Picture 1 (cartoon, rainbow, N blue to C red):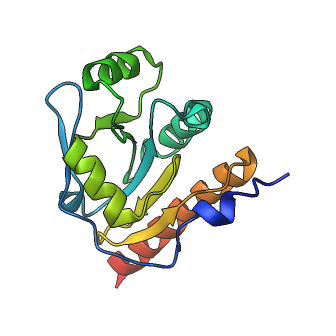
Picture 2: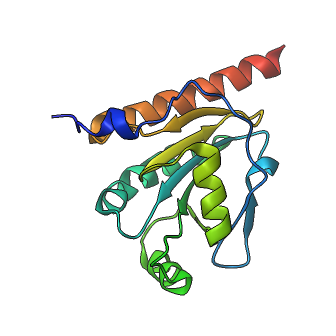
Length: 169
């Protein structure tokens, strides 16, 4: 049965916006500036520590990451810092997770900016950015596992095909 809250919390996926100039920080002095990621498909999985569904979908995100490991695709999880969160605890928690996709963290200001820019009302929230830096998916990929997984592959494959077509021109 589909989640009846899905349409309420979903964002208009057709709204194509430019990638914001927001930088995220990894746990080892690694920085990911969103507007500098042109030339590849970037999949952002926004999550928070209080979201059980966010943790349950991490294996699917890992599979997506592994599937596109040899492609021009970067799959990363971005923790949206909540008021109650301790940043050091979040880093420690993610370091214990057995996944190889990138983990990035927000500050209170960058979390607020990302919520405003992408219209994030609830997590998990996915943003897919094409190689030209345009957002091609902004919202949820439904809460049903197979639909979410199939949507993710379809969106990334479409972005890769368009990039290949543009390169051939």
